[in-house]
Length: 174
Image 1 (cartoon, rainbow, N blue to C red):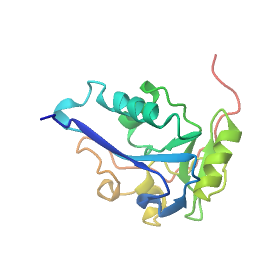
Image 2: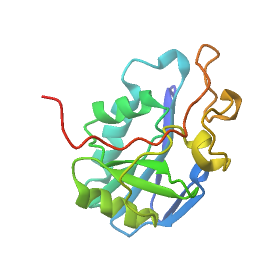
Image 3: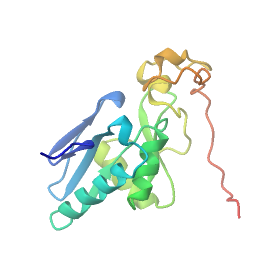
Image 4: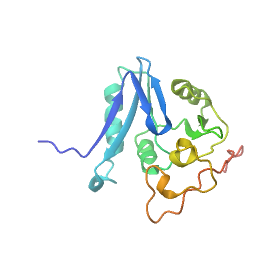
């Protein structure tokens, strides 16, 4: 009997991001990876990046593009994606009108493909670094109670201050 240390799902036809109220169809040559978790006692051992790599190897002959998204407040998920060799194309954020947009990183054409898939616009600034505090509750206040954030903030974390708009810097540090 094998022991399950973690899990994740591969969507092949349609998917949704419930926290952002987004539903989208996937082209036949694309996949969306979602809802990954590693058992707490096995976190930090590289299970997540290896699972992602295994899924990518299985899908490589069937698909042209694989998408995966993590909530900005879930930095361990982003780190695992990077360790698996995935390159971020942008950051999802709530806009000031409560809608969702994608702020591109290095490759705007790839970010545009992601925005098109999700049915959202490209945006120039990130309004909310936390999905729940920024717009899912439609409360765009300067300080939001930590109890309203998703996932719940740790007790040692200060209250979330998600509704502070910041423009990306045009210059880069050397």
